[in-house]
Amino acid sequence: MTMMLENKVAVVTGGAAGIGRSIALTMAKEGANIAILDVCKPETAEEACALIAETGATVKFYHCDVSNFELVDTTIKQVIADLGGVDILVNNAGITRDSLLVSMKEEDFDKVIAINLKGVFNTIHACYHHFMRKRSGRIINISSVTGLMGNPGQANYTAAKAGIIGLTKTTAKELASRGVTCNAIAPGFIQTAMTDVLSDKAKDAMLGAVPMKRMGQPEDIAKTALYLASDLSSYVTGEVIRVDGGMCM
Ligand code: NAP
Image (cartoon, rainbow, N blue to C red; front, side, top):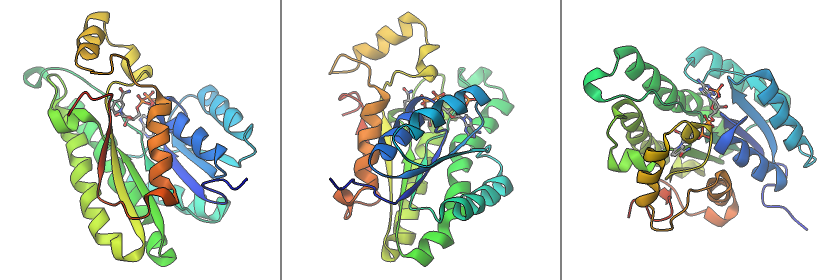
């Protein structure tokens, strides 16, 4: 049986945990070899790599903070040397530093923008010429429905997630004629470490806004990422796909 991503190489930032791990695993099951760029604890990296290796895929872990422009550039060069190229770039690494705007510390605004938005620029910049030369490539950026709707307490995060959408569309327009697509996924309320820290009250309030009345699972996002990485989406670019149980229609 042929697999959807046979012999492809996927770079997944923040791929050791949560949504990123699920995306990496799903792509590995469809034949892709995987490069994880993450800053997680060594045991988290080992666990993710062991799970992915069980699929038979080659998996490599790179300790790389996506907000570091130079480091991202050298790490992508190393991935190309190690795995023979990059076909799919999934920009998934992200953090939250929530508080109402009036009490938000400048450093918390800057840090979230540096990782969640500039990190996406950094990896696309590092892969740009490689994709142009190959005349193919898939870029998948993980935004958020909060970037579409706004969310009290998340001025930094929502600005970054809305910024990702502009960055996605510009990249899509610049690279479309070179056979490279760039799309965004806007997840809703997904069960991961990022949302585990919310209070029960906050979780209930968010669930109340979800017509499907359940939290999403990382696999719900991974299936959409697989679609955007595969030939099934060959004429789709500059799109933002909400995967949110109807939360933001
Ligand atoms: P998560 O469980 O916290 O996993 C994020 C991963 O990214 C972790 O391994 C984390 O490492 C890593 N990371 C953090 N900073 C990094 C950096 N500077 N460079 C490289 N890796 C870094 O989060 P998640 O819920 O899976 O979220 C994944 C993406 O989906 C994020 O962009 C998030 O904004 C987006 N999203 C999530 C939801 C949701 O409901 N969960 C909704 C909408 C959008 P550490 O654990 O060591 O920090």
